[in-house]
Image (spheres, rainbow, N blue to C red):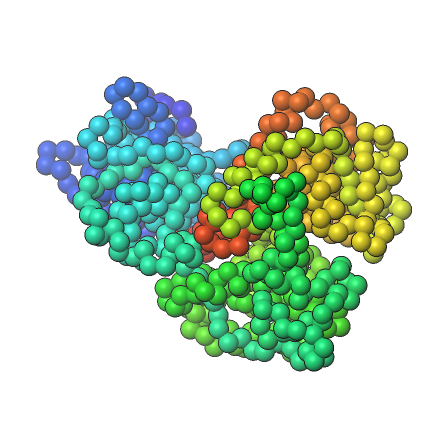
Length: 630
């Protein structure tokens, strides 16, 4: 909003009155000899810095909510700068647009006689944002300085504006060191983390002895406390147990000793090493620092991998941020499709009955529960692709549960995409840095690569077939067909991607492709075709399906309409832009790969759990205090 000093001012008393009428979350006290009030002390305030100068920084407090909901009096105050008549006329439409989701905050003790401030993102300007994407601030903080040690300035990231309460702890944990220690002392559970920061006041007292409080086993298991639901009903009676062997990562299930032709799936072999598969050496030398990082991983063991990783870290449900339901839907679907198992047709009903009786589920209807799906949500929604044991992602029972899937569906709003398990798996904190150097330093001999095949519903008129035809008749494009037996074994595909600059990724019988993640982990720039997948899934852009991992506008992806458009973009791209995109991929890699344990640091599991926790906190905060996002 623009300044208008000649218009009626917003006094602090009017602000307090409006907030009180609207269901205020305001605390105030009177200063002798002054009309204006000040809210709560500065301790634990988080301020978004708007401008800075030699005299200090000015900003607005992000975690001092003013009103729990909107009312006409507050709406008129927010619009008062437009003039009294205009404010009266516009207050009604403002309330109609925002409803109970009008978020107003006391930005600080200064400037309350000045105009308010509206903060929002680019999506709001384009008419795509919800009311909760807008933040109104009355008042400012001015002259903030770090000279006296009261405030600390740290980097700010855009996601900071959307995190639930308590924001101060979120920020302090990200800062690390003494800041993280101070946050743990203030909140003994020590389970909070953050991704971004602004400017925040500090209190100096802390000791080395106190710093050891609440560390526990969190370092070994990540910084999200997870309870793994124990003793789920036994899923299946297996026909081949006498002839097969037990898979360590699907306890209670057996598998055949060899694949049955369905996607070359072999659960016994694929289940090695925390469900990440047998070693797959792609380095030129066994002495290479990346020689031990690659494995032949099957994407349909994703849920089993989460279960294996978190089983040793499970905490009591009352201490947990999230509750993992180790319901291996995708794995059981695969076993059943292979003919390796007979799954009870009422198994999903037994799972639901078991969960509904637990105290953890009853406290909020499963709102903090997480279900990992080793399959495409779009497929699981189809009757023709029924699991055979009753699971459906659109069932109302699962409506509050956060679903993590290798391919989310925007039509199932509680589903969120996570990367397909690819072939790179770090075991230590330096491994992904070594792998990034490896892929950035590769000499790549092919400019444009397509690894693809025709199967299932893919006929000659299918978009993938047209892409294959275009590549086949373009001498600048290398086509490797997957139609032959063993033509696309994992080692072959990885080697081809490591030798290519751009990798075409057209949709097939689904929008999502494992090849996108194999390409990214290889440092090959994926070229995707969102328009071709629109018939299968509205909004088929990968940045919408995987918002926690592929931010909108990321240079790590190239989007094209058809083969001609893709080939032209690849041919005309300057080398400098190409290198920029390769470096953008390298920066993303730690978050995209699945590590062998939490000792490796940031990985896809840790990123998914943190993002799920933030979603759960936001849902709880909105439910408990509508109109506030902190």
